[in-house]
Image (cartoon, rainbow, N blue to C red):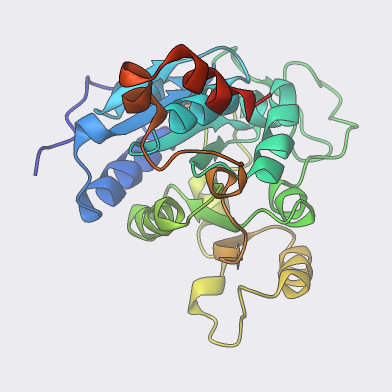
Length: 284
Ligand code: SF4
């Protein structure tokens, strides 16, 4: 087994993203993945550095565009394990349209969002998940926009795997990411990942002891979407664990007529132009 050795992260000391990186690497090692078979695609923001820091292949894409890039990589080579990583600004702001349609499309990738409720890289502006009334550089009198609720949004889209973790508990987070990778189809893991420099409200301390762990609740049925909506609402989104899982939804490649068993990147090497065109026509 090779290590996922990466360059030294440049995040602020104590940033929640360190825990997410650690959990992603632990999950990859636990699953016996080799670095050359894993690709991490990131968007823009502090979280965007994940593609450089992870230690497998990586691509630092454009702001909000990690998901279309990651889906394209997976469709071109389905033998790869593909993860997209980003932040709440990247994913729920400029990238929101891609998020919704990726859940509908159900390409077999894992999407990990480091949700710190603020724009960190640009030094502390309100983000789509900032709590109502948050005082930030762009909201000195408090935000007036209701925050996006990522879990409820994913539940409304019937995303086949939805989990939430906390970067202060990397062991549990690694288990969630492991399950997300194993899920056949689009999987979404939202992570409370504190920005220690610019967000003094959503801190490690604020989450510790205040999160409801659904994985520890034997009465919780993660296949019941309406129960998930109710429990997430009751806990005011402060849950961790697997929120919802539906293994009956076929992944994108299993539904597209004529999608070959062999990865497209291999096929394209020996294909006649006409046959290659026929395969590509299925994606139009
Ligand atoms: Fe992390 Fe915030 Fe520093 Fe960015 S600004 S590296 S999110 S602590």
